[in-house]
Length: 251
Ligand code: NAI
Image 1 (cartoon, rainbow, N blue to C red):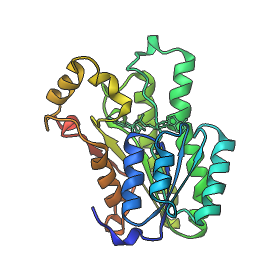
Image 2: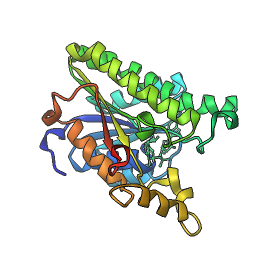
Image 3: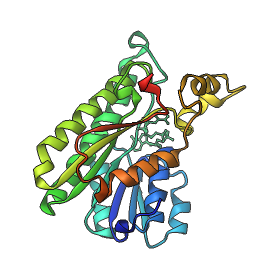
């Protein structure tokens, strides 16, 4: 997808070393944006830096550690100046554990990464967006933020929390030039659910069969929705959660 308006804009993407975050980073790079990536692992980030030496930079750290978040945002601003678009994409799955199978460590890991990480990064960047009276924030929810069955107890709770946080965020700051929305993907083929494809891939086949569209989606499809949602064409879309799930929650 091509959007001319992203040339010269700066996008900060969390979770950009893998899967959906990586696809989002590439989509914005291909559209001329500067992209600052933040992830707990390096993954393919050095490769992206080689491919886009002027448009791309990254920092390693955890979204759930305030000092890491502060340092990353400072670095991003030093390299590219103001951040126009924040994509809170980093997230972890809980292995579909029911509540009695969820110990405190797992609960905290999921909540700290998915919810606290989104809050910390947002609070770090929001003041400069408000100062410029302009900013786009797109949080990564999930079908697990809307219905049961897309994760375990902690993951589903965390994604429902992101849905609520996004609505409140948009309502509180939309008059200050901020537009916040969330995306709720269904079955997207990424390293997060590689276990479904392991062995004979029975689980992956079952998921595809249960999905009305009859297939998994690729991360680039979520990246394309992100390009649209962050654009001026979507200027009146505020505080919503947009499913991209092959019809999963409609059935
Ligand atoms: P992924 O596992 O391929 O990528 C997640 C990235 O987040 C990884 O690079 C990982 O290192 C990073 N990350 C994890 N913890 C972090 C931390 N504390 N600080 C910084 N980075 C951290 O997963 P995928 O599939 O790309 O998921 C991206 C987002 O999309 C997640 O929020 C996930 O919950 C959500 N999602 C994914 C779906 C799917 O089917 N793949 C469906 C619905 C939502």
